[in-house]
Image 1 (cartoon, helix red, strand yellow):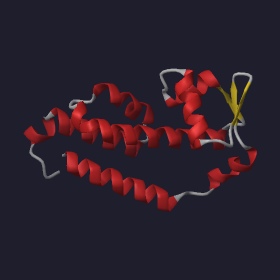
Image 2 (image 1 turned 45 degrees about the vertical axis):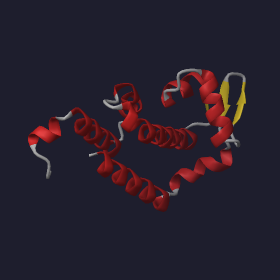
Image 3 (image 1 turned 120 degrees about the vertical axis):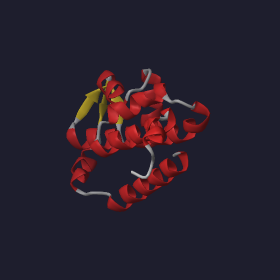
Length: 138
């Protein structure tokens, strides 16, 4: 690292590096929980909002590839929405092909095999955007 120990210990820098580590390791629950621990909401709010949306979308894609259906409670817990209405709004706006019935989300079977394909261009673009945002913050 090019930062001094003092700089690395600053709350804002430590927050950004912890987020980066959690993203790299794949501990998305830690990333989602970080929204409650932002050191400077006026500086991090926009970035965290985009990051939370991306993490939730990644969790949704993994869930779609892994399950035929999920209960609304399980999906809400996985994606860490505060309530079922927020989850349903997310499903309506980003996954119109999912069907909600009888307290469950049913995934489109045609998309479940999509998990074998890696959206490399999208992932690369998102990672570069995160790195740029982290660089600006730090």
